[in-house]
Image 1 (cartoon, rainbow, N blue to C red):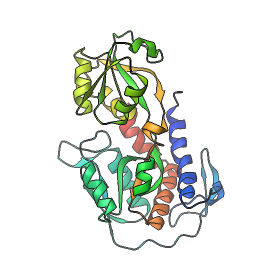
Image 2 (cartoon, rainbow, N blue to C red):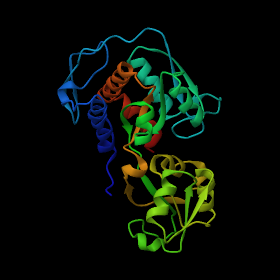
Image 3 (cartoon, rainbow, N blue to C red):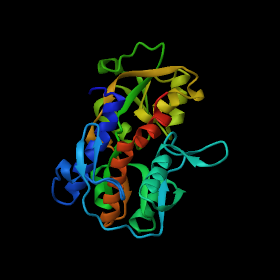
Length: 291
C-alpha cells in the first residue's frame, strides 16, 4: 500500500483508460492506437504517454445526449447555494460534452435509478463514480477509469492510532458506511476491531468528531473534501497509507453506458485523453481535491 503523488494519480488514471477499454473488445491495443478527440491534430504529446495516433472513428449522431450524475455525494455531485447541481463528476461531464461537441442534458438521480436507466437504455451514459467491478462490467459498457478509489483511515488529530499498524485496531471502534465496500473490507481484515456501520458517511464522521470512534475507514477522495470543509471543525487527519484492493474497491471509477454502446464509449475514452492532454482534467481535479 503505497501513497502516490497527485501527478502520478492522474497519469495512472488516463494510462489505464485505453488498455482497459481495448481489452473489452478482445484485444490489447498498443499506445499507438489510443484515441483522441474529433477535430484534433493527428498526434499529440501527453506527459507519461508519448505520442498517440488518432484512429478512424465514425462520427457520433448529432442529437441531445442524456447524462446521469448522482445526488448528494460531495465533492463529486451536490447542489450549490443557488441549488445548481455541481461537483467533480458534473464538471467532467460538462468538459466531455464541450470536447466532443455534444449537446447534453445532465440529470441528477439516485443510484438505483441510474442503474435502471442505463440497463433500460434511458440514458446515454453516467458520470457517477461507478466502480470498474465484475458486477458492473456484466451490466454496462465502461470506459477506462477517470480516477482511482483508494480507502483511508481518518482519525482525530490527537489520536495515537497509526494506520500502518493494524494491531492497534484490536477492540477499538471503527466506523464504516453500511453495505459499502469499506464495510466488507473491514469485516474481513479488521475482524478484531469493533466495527460499527452507519447509514451514511456523514453520520460516521460526526461520531469520529465527538470521540465515539477511534477511526473512520472510507473513500479517500470523499473524506479529503470533508477534512477541508467546515463540518470537520479542523479536528481530523489521515493516518497510514492508501488501501488499493480491486476485489473490494474495484479498478477505479469509470463512465458507464448501456450495453452495446461501443462507439460512444470509444469517443468518451477519446475525450478523457484529450482533457488530460490539454490540462483541463487537472484543472477540474485541482478545483475539488487540492486544497
